Amino acid sequence: MARHDPKKKKTPEEPEDSETNELPPTEPVQNEEEKSYTKKKLDQLFWLRVALAVIGGILATFIFESIEGEDRRWASITFMIIIFIVSIGIGKKLNLQLPRSDRKKLVTTGIGSFIFIYLFMWILSYTIVNLPNESGILTPFT
Image 1 (cartoon, rainbow, N blue to C red):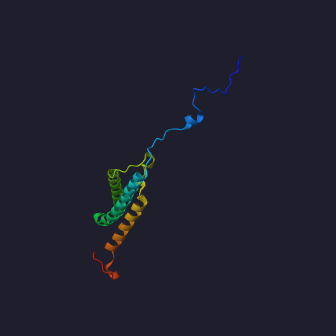
Image 2: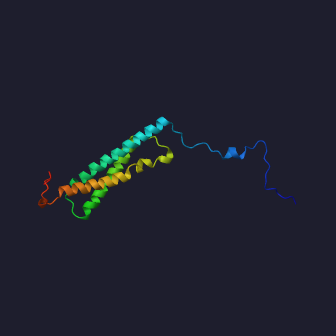
Image 3: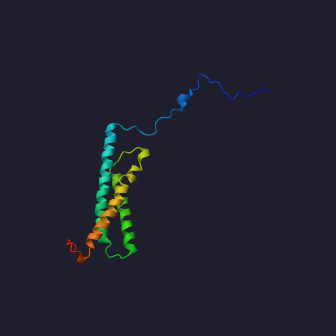
């Protein structure tokens, strides 16, 4: 019986291994101008989220003033999530030309700053609005 040789000889028609391992790039290569445009748009999205966090945190103090207890907290957190989802929609309208691997940047850009600034502004504005009158500090809200 003839043994089968596992080492196959190359024929001239077959391409070399180095050529078959090279795959064409799946993503378009961005030039410097496109990269700077994308960075500029991501910066705009970041600062938009910061502004929305400041405005949303202050608005939450006044919008949910009539709600008492635990429900106020959950209403404000839900309001924060809604504002963030709106910012994602605005980010999509900015026509960011992100490579497929960077699509998550639309959601992750500025998310930490958004959450902490929103919470900070909500707590700060709530504290200022609800200062006790005996403190001696004059505020425009008392």
